[in-house]
Length: 219
Image (cartoon, rainbow, N blue to C red; front, side, top):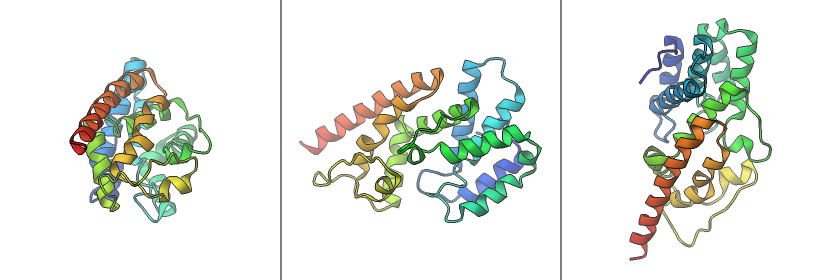
């Protein structure tokens, strides 16, 4: 699953931090994001330079290393990222793209203000959101819910549309509610031509799953 464009030091750090994660933000998740971000970018830019593809793959592998859902010490993780030999060799401009993208790409970070990411970062963001859709997205939603002790579904718990990070992170929810509160809305947030096509297909798959779930629940 390793992207051709990512260096060993990047992969090693991602595996060290995320290798034991059980919330759906594990090493295989970031590997998929890196691989798919590169693939999407090459679809839209067939003549992309290897240096741009390396930056995209690196951001894909590292985007969850500093995420508040995964680590209690994001500052320490940032120091580890910026000390990586691969990152140190990036141009100052590419280092800034990496910092900006990883800091501002999450769904929660964009609830109160939409951040316009640099173009390479838009492909990483799209690949990350695509991994929250489709069959893998369904599996990840229930893994995350189970890790945080959310019930699968409870019709007495209402769907809550959050407009700020605090509500989003701390309101009472179920795994099924999460589809209606976030996942089904990701298609509308996609940045890229290639990403929008895949998001539509994967969202339709999730809607079919939810229809069947509700059918079985109400039998």
